[in-house]
Image (tube, rainbow, N blue to C red; front, top):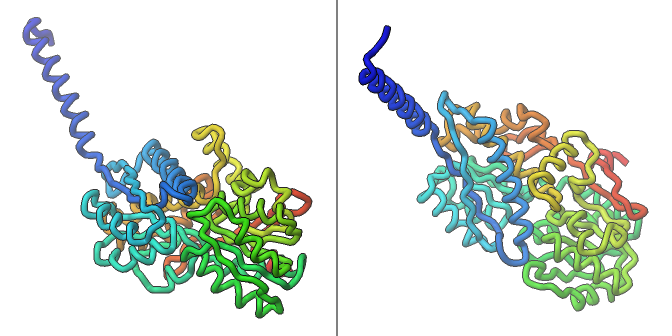
Length: 392
């Protein structure tokens, strides 16, 4: 059929208008869902907080690029990040703000103090707490809207004790950080060390988040002649503690709590040499598994000159699992329904999105995994699982 030129122009304009309307309706149909973050983005733990944020940002970019569809509707995720300066009261205030102003169905908090503070209100607010802390109390409390992202740290205590005591001796100096998470580690590690026949010869927690000079504190514990130092907090100050202990003549081993990462410590100490005899979590860049290496390379392409830590990778996986749980639950707003699908979500994630091999979550919401750790021997990292260390 042919049209007069004026009619043809009208048909074309109408078709264009319909096409634009279609584009507009597609844009309207894409729901924007905001995921919250409250963590330290300034102060002594800023690097730690920014690593967590990097993992979340990487996951959200991939999810949006791949396309997220929930209950037949296209969804775009956006991250809203607030600085809490590692202050639990700020975490609680930020979470309330994230829910009220941004309608976030989930908020990620990367420290135990902030997580405990948020647990006082998150069930009432109807927001899922993604807690990046390995303190078992977080999930033992029975909060029905909490997921603990890393496996609980108590799994490290017995194998770390066995390795360090067997290699260096029974005298332990406690010189870790003084924040809530480090205190929880001390409360578990100290009696385990003593139960294994060891002796705590010095105890001097230090303010890792506010100090840049640890000579006086380290000197104090070294005066007791320990065989092993129990240390850890944020990675950079932990590195300073190691460096200054070696400069003061300490020849023994280090037990490093899981918040501190050996590869980041090594940047402060000038390599793994000063960490000889240490045991701690495995740096992701030293992980030999193929999907872990693939993740490291993808991160490096996005962030030239940077290496990902487990804060990056575990929180990356948590956000992917959150999106998968939304798909499985058929909702982006019902925190209870999303929480109910998170075990299945972790189990069904492709390995590409799960470089740390999280196997699922238990009934209380705690992550399960056969965790890899690292020991430094001959100035090099040796990769070993907790299950292997515990069986020796």
